Amino acid sequence: MFLLLLAFIYGSSAIINSAVGAYQDAWFAFIIGWFSSYLLIGVYVYLSLLHPQRTLIDILTECFGRFFGKIFATFYIFYFIHLAALVLRNFGEYMNTVNYPDTPLLFLLIALAVVTAFAVRNGLEAISRVNEILMPFAIFFVIALFFIFFHTYELKNLLPFLDKGFAHVLKISFGVLTFPFGETVVFLMIFPSLNKKENLLKTTSLSITASGLILLIITLRDLMALGPELINTIIFPPHSTTGLLPDFVIDPFIAANLLINGGLKIVICLYAASLGITQLFGLQDYKLFVLPITAIVISLSNWIYESLPEMLRWAAEVYPIYAIPFQFIIPITLLLISIIKKKRSTEKTTN
Image (cartoon, rainbow, N blue to C red; front, side, top):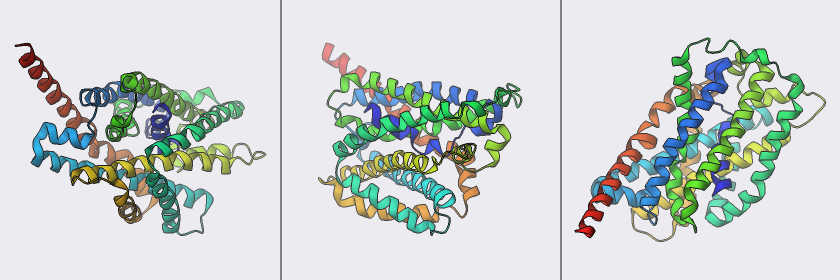
């Protein structure tokens, strides 16, 4: 779970950094969003511990009743599918821009989606085992690159501090909280599968710490190497940073590193959506829905944006607002209802 959550948070955040809008204060905006995520993800963990055998779909039905619970469950299934489509498009655009400019975008989307669908059909345990092998290499690669580019860093790129005001930094940090940390609400579909739920809080806390450090390293690396203006002008800062070392051909390694973790994020979303539909209709095998949902994700991913600038604008300006009910309002409401129900149940048992 530690590595699975780490890979999910790292995912597409490595190519689309929601903190860069704060310019030279990007590192500070990221830290605020990162530290705030401990409280938000704590809500998800506590909610899961109150319902150890239930997924998010089951919790919604129990707290809101069958009718309203299924309505909210349908919304969440759409959110998981939409999130998979967003991440798929992010990596499709990255490959199309950086690695395969002459290849049709739709072909790249299909190629990546087919692999992720195959992974989902192999089950959650197989996904986690493969991630155990691959994720340590990704961590090592990020740390190694940070030191390789050390001679290109300029500390003046971190100044002046709070030049655009604290309110602007706070706004950007909220975007960091919703993307990527708030997206871990999808793990409410996975937590019930754990063998040792008593370690859930400790494991998630360690994973948030590790993933936050990795993304902070990437933010500082790109900011100090490229400067605040450039990271807001170019499309994919990590790719441009590698261009500062013309003697090293490491771009293929970066692309492979990003695709592995981005693919894992899509896999988790596809699994959650497939399992959610299965539970919503009281069926047994989630694998029946993997391919149809993958087809929907491919179509939605290809249709959702008209251009790459629109994708970046939507991620920075629209998504933080769009995510509020799924990441904040509904989970917090579920937690309050669960606490009240547990308290009443305890009082009845005592009496």
